[in-house]
Length: 156
Image 1: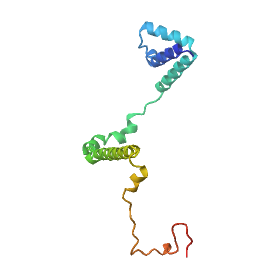
Image 2 (image 1 turned 60 degrees about the horizontal axis):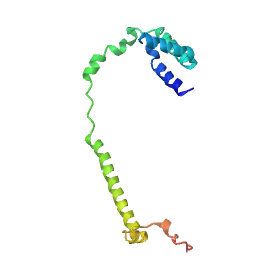
Image 3 (image 1 turned 135 degrees about the vertical axis):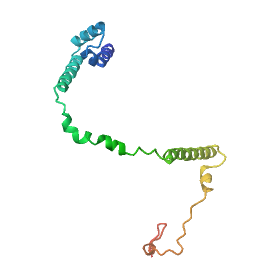
Image 4 (image 1 turned 60 degrees about the vertical axis):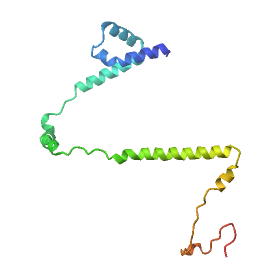
């Protein structure tokens, strides 16, 4: 299929419903019908749409009695219904806080990398000066840790 044919097909397919409704000017309708005679794909699409329309026209609509159980009390239910509550303002605030934290973290990381790449201090020094978290186990009784030795040695 050439680029011209695909553009022509797209134009015709976009107007198939108006063609079926006879809502196109005569010149456009004649041009589109000529395309439909030459293009099997577009002609097949026209047949499918025509068949769908025929199927929908033959459907039987339910009678009003079938939905009486729903429609009888509808006005009173609508009158009793509470209006929807507005969204809480805090929901809108969280994305802004997250964006601010991400921006600050990115700025700090950028400054740390610029400092490390400037050549004045090696990156190991930069991280060596960072505070280390300390864990104190004083006063805790952890019997499962009694035989554990860290550092690759054997347990006693």
